[in-house]
Image 1 (cartoon, rainbow, N blue to C red):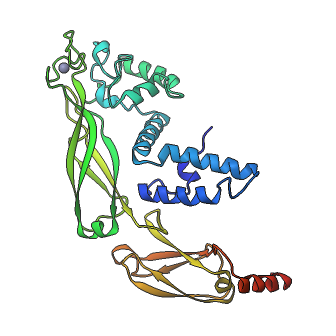
Image 2 (image 1 turned 90 degrees about the horizontal axis):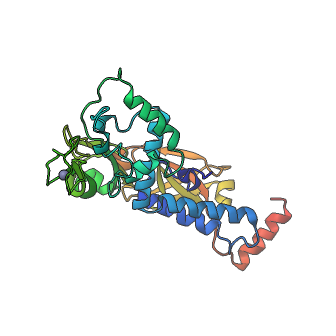
Image 3 (image 1 turned 60 degrees about the horizontal axis):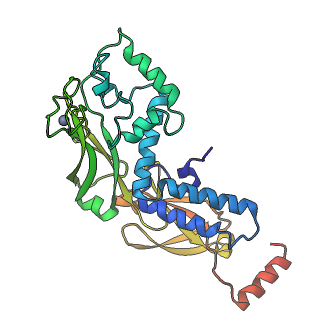
Length: 336
Ligand SMILES: [Zn+2]
């Protein structure tokens, strides 16, 4: 049973790819076996962190993982991910790319099909259920529409403010060039698409990100999803993610910035200077008795003039000098 990789890496589902990487590096350093020799718990944690990285650490792996999750969620909700694509009803099953077993090879959907056919963990019972549903005669005929594609793109805060154009490449099902979709649901086999009516081709599009784009905002690009051989194309849904750079993260649409404070400042109070997302340097008063994890909201210092929530974390020195060691000794002697 593998853990949720997002939780293992301590990032939100809406984290940018860069944020996922940063969090991984930090945790891997922290739990590295070299730093915790002979500690089974640390080693287990480290392995979990590595496994999570394998799942979502690169943009490509994460795309695949997220897609997989979406399918599982659809099944969990009892939905039919192919309802838009199963226009064949009961007849011509062999020519429907989503029904014909083993015909998915080379498709964008091959992993979906694998899942469906029990290839990748737990798909089998749902497939059975799915088949029964499809054959049920009283079921309303599904609409003829290709499935939507969901994807995320990362931009930086500046690009979000000014708006930007992003080249986005993805593979999707397109109408077969050779038979123009006519072989779908017919006895006529097409050598190019084997009677699926669609083939996987890559598309590159320019996504216009409007100025003032928000983190988590979704852009719907009409008909840029998978094409249907006899119906409408699905849409491409792009979620914009704003990369907020080192030490910052999104949490439910709120921008959180970590502020490292020394132990003595936490205990005694004091001041720290921070860099805001807008590049300003701001001094923050730290109240006496501040605790790690305490937060404070700074109005107007967040992205695009919004609020910035700062979270106090402990500044951990790489090394302590002789003076500091002596001071620490005295601190320990005093009972702290
Ligand atoms: Zn064809």
